[in-house]
Amino acid sequence: MKKTALLTAVVAVALSGCTTLYSKNREWKLPAGLGNYVISAKIDVGFLTRHATISVNDRAVLTGEAYFWSNTITMSGTVDHFPITAVCDRDAKSCDVAIAGIHAAVLQF
Image (tube, rainbow, N blue to C red):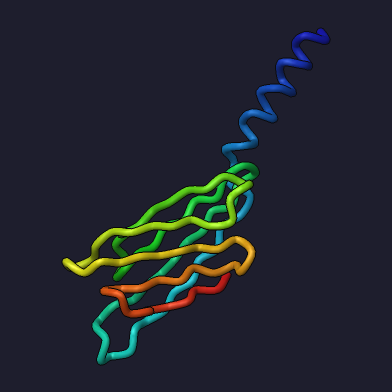
């Protein structure tokens, strides 16, 4: 009986590291002169990890993950042949997004 209880507790703790505790979403539209982009960020915070997704016009273009000991998630890629970068900071509770080297948005969580 004690072995079963111990095994159950170990499995529960192991699986809790993969569980999402909460999610946050933010969205921002670029001014008309800079392009027709709506940038959104989603952060899934778990017990051991954080997962970030940056979307442009409802298309996921960047994804990244960090463990609890890291403060930032840094991501880079392209959208419509333009480079896009994002840095999500745990302490600032924000994601800074730049498209083609132009600071596009600060998404606060």
